[in-house]
Image (cartoon, rainbow, N blue to C red; front, top):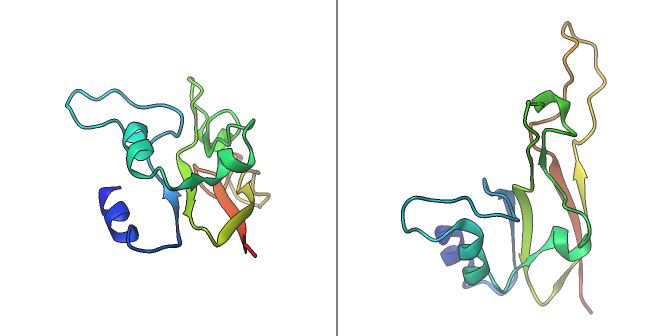
Length: 131
């Protein structure tokens, strides 16, 4: 995250997205003294908007969800928002964001196990230029 921050810092308009490998709503406890992930993000990426909560403030937007994605069902339910789209721009305005790959693929195969595109649901977002 430090490398991404340092590379993108000099640009006036930036979007970065992907699997952040840590949930957006909680910090995992660490034994060493390194800053916790979301605490670090809040401090160093404060000029960025996290598009999901910006446009869906009352929806958790889980992209890793063992309850919904039965391909990865476990005994213990795990619901996290690991994947994000972040934007920092005075010119680009996020219009929409939604999950994709969150329905079972209907295909013929030997196994009766459910099949999804991935263990994570994807995100797709649309932006427009501000006037």
